[in-house]
Image 1 (cartoon, rainbow, N blue to C red):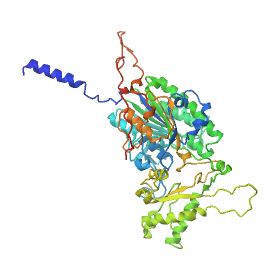
Image 2 (tube, helix red, strand yellow; image 1 turned 90 degrees about the vertical axis):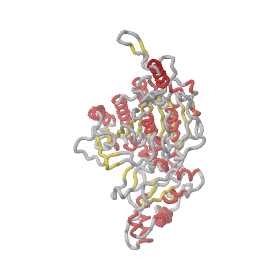
Image 3 (cartoon, rainbow, N blue to C red; image 1 turned 60 degrees about the vertical axis):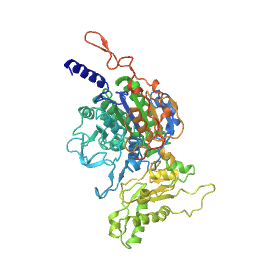
Length: 593
């Protein structure tokens, strides 16, 4: 081939292939949106937004209620409604049987024989961010999370170019929704209130985070909570509006310091607000104090979204935001009992003692062997395998024995009153065991073929060793002080949470009909053009998506050159953004993990 012809041939090949060469750092949406924010409110039942709607500001909760796609009928489809499982579910689009996180803490006798281990503690790492000499305990990591998150998939799709961070007052709420591939997760030291992280993510805090910790902001938060100083930040400040404002300010410092929303790919922040849960456990969902903190959160959201609008390129038009909660909450037993509901409180310590007495009578008469481990919270009761091993009892026999002893143990928690009741008065509430299941029953799927059975099946975890799953009757829980309450059950008040979206692809409206929090990760993954998380069972919420032709983003800001001419910062004005491709078709059925 003559030299000239060969040169022309090579030029032609280059011209044909150059347009198809993938950009090394391009996301499926070519940096649209600039930023995705997944906002999780800890212990936040959906009906709060119906009760207090008249209180809200234009750009707080109303951003979703009036200007976004909002789903008021969102219910979790599993039964262990706790903080760590809930945050894991939001990030992974899977339930406990997919992501593995069954509770906030569990017994793992191979790692610690003195106490349960938490869902995110990891002795292989260390805490970063505390002053030298501080007692910090083990580091943290997502080691127990068995599935990827939507943030992980974004990082994989962009070859690590996308920045993904998690923030919360609680370590588990910062770590689990952001995922294993996150650039970092930050939470506060419970005693001091300083933000910290783990060497799993980085060897030291970024300069911007150190500057935030060393600023006057922490002192201001304490003063706003009417505390000049405290050695229990979470207990004394955590349940006040000042803790939420403090957390939002740290999120702003992170976005600014990490230049989130200013890259060639989409960035993602998971932000979990803890104050509602810390207060809610003490006062219950119907207290005036809880309404006040909800209203304070609305004010903070209004300010935060306004700040995002001014500090991210293209403003809110270039941001996607989702809002949901990790779980709801039960009415306070004292309040529910006054209305006639059997809202009993269960003395978990006494229940464990009763079970240990029963096991000793059966397997080691006259002894005081610990067969059921202490320091436990419902709904799981972990068994002390070494004690059963020494007695020659295998797992099926051990779990069956504890299960058989549960009903008598419940019956002895309260004694029936012999006193004559006044006319028209009701009997006092009493603990009732509704159902119980052994670990082996859950593992084998030996459950009712009903909606209730599905809730239990989705709650199976391999963590906790040998255990028995307890399901008390509705409105019943462990011992709580005054009007305190909690959450952990399969009942609707614990499973009902908000789900809302705001951003260019979403059609404004209220969408009735059952949806699930797992749909959040599935929907975002589809819109971002990345794989769904590895164990995702969510549906894409196509009913709330605009036609592709109507999805538009702010035009690039023209940049004036040194000679005075104006040029587009990225695309030409008439070019259609890559983000306007049609969303993926909804799955006809949920894929199995």
